[in-house]
Picture 1 (tube, rainbow, N blue to C red):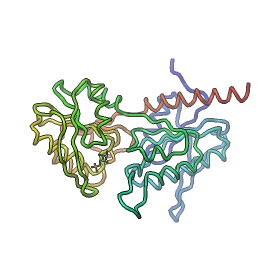
Picture 2 (picture 1 turned 135 degrees about the vertical axis):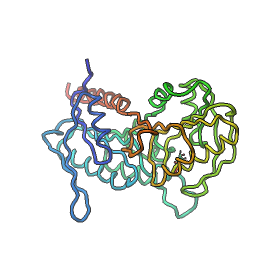
Picture 3 (picture 1 turned 120 degrees about the horizontal axis):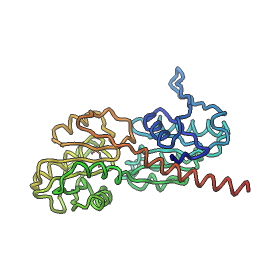
Picture 4 (picture 1 turned 90 degrees about the vertical axis):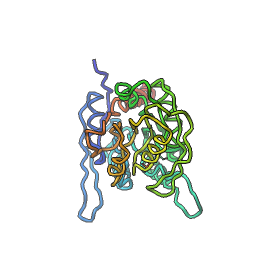
Length: 317
Ligand code: R5P
């Protein structure tokens, strides 16, 4: 029998309703109503039905990808709407956390986007923020609310396991992905290698070195994000130069696929991409397999629900 968490209502922002629906379905619920309109001047307006949220624990699903500022502001409006409708608590599922890649100041006078985005979210007084493979540590560390951080690695590795050959090698396309690659390698019981890259512009990357043996092996490149595709393209060049088998697979948690990415990646001759549905994607289905993160998110929501019930039980014995 399905374990339906009591007292939870799942609502969606406009960034990824499909994922919100999948999450609600996983929980044995249907998606609640949240009216999001745009005024003629472009401002957003969010309204929930108090009969639906009053006394309930609301889970609001809203990744903040390209156009992150608008999606994030929608989330702030939704949190306010839920509170004014009498919600007992509001948890935000932000499976892709926009601005997290702006995690370092390279010089004075530069904004630290990851911290600004986290602080803005903190203003919503959320009871929980659930994130998936947030880039770097700055955003997560600056979030001044309880967080649950999950990784898509087990979900994507399970999908990869059905398709990849045993003579594969997991590859981190940069040092930042090394920890993720080690996790994939552990789950898939494969060796791993790390590409050392240097970013020269927002779209261009050069590779300095490949650490680890890839000769005669089939690379499975894993990363948190594919945005312009520059990182993946540079990694494929370096791996070919190192003598790998020219049959590469890529797995990334977030398929951002910025404009021009598919064209750039086409030249890299990747056999197949695996991404999750943290971001609504327009990726061509023949080359990109989308694996749902909804079951993993449902586990987080169930945990949250149990904690909430504990809180209510203690305060109303
Ligand atoms: C960077 O450190 C990230 O982990 C990704 O490698 C990067 O964001 C991918 O961006 P792009 O596809 O634009 O190279």
